[in-house]
Image (cartoon, rainbow, N blue to C red; front, side, top):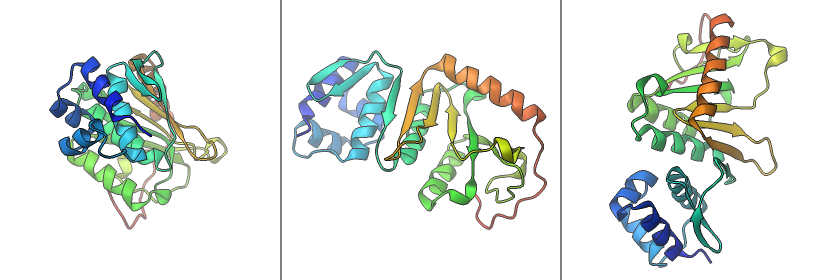
Length: 216
């Protein structure tokens, strides 16, 4: 049984009001209050949002209580871990990310595999002022964004193993069963990945057209 009082204790350690916790986790105040008062047990995705918000404050909730979080990485192990990852990016975007880091960089993606829920989140990101660039497989012309936002990597070097970089976050596909991801909250690591991405961006070929019938 998930202990909501641990969430209340973690919020107190972070020095957040219920309203601040609601904003940082992207959850309703009533929902959080009910969880803290143990009127409801949170769903997996709700718990993931709470944990990601607390991780930014260096705090985590465990089965036994609350403690300072020493690790810079957390596992996103819900069935919809990629949606959780995109939600984490939206939360990161609300933390005054510098303009030059307010860009979602995507390694080795394939828009053909994006379900409607992912497309909706990409559209929400654009509405929030987040720009995107992606590295995709050479010859792939199913590009849902502007063609200028893509570069081709040679087929022999491509694997559909997505990595996301935004702000101080690096999110990796763990390639595990069941599916899961790893979220690294470390600005130095994110900056390093950004530099490598940008070096490749300068030399990789550009697609010339998109045949996608859906755009985000």
